[in-house]
Length: 130
Image (cartoon, rainbow, N blue to C red; front, side, top):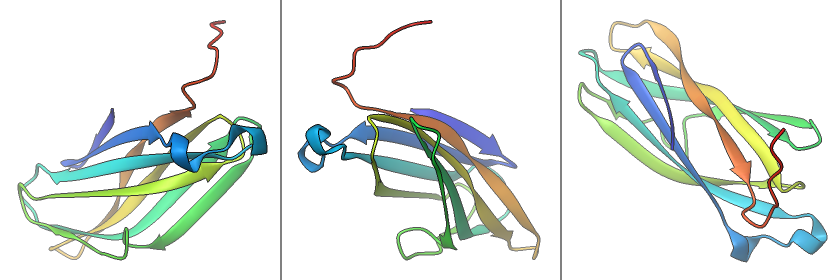
């Protein structure tokens, strides 16, 4: 579990390797990740856009921009929460994801919220500590 808080918006990411959608012999690896967004502040906000940065073990970077998440632009009143699960394929057995959400406050102000960096690691890998 990975967590970051920006301006009273808490984002928690929980990745998991999905073996049944992966084929290591073909360099196809798949992870699901669950994101929980919680408004711990006193102002209602709406998640308007997402920006993901996905980096594989070879340093190849893919950026994803788009409206909302999983087809929604959730509104979070104070104490509100929104959870969703999505997935990401990689051509390497390890990688990392991070990014941000663009939020719109009920005051009309927009601001970016950090999505914490989280590690994507296939469980069959032998770990080497440096």
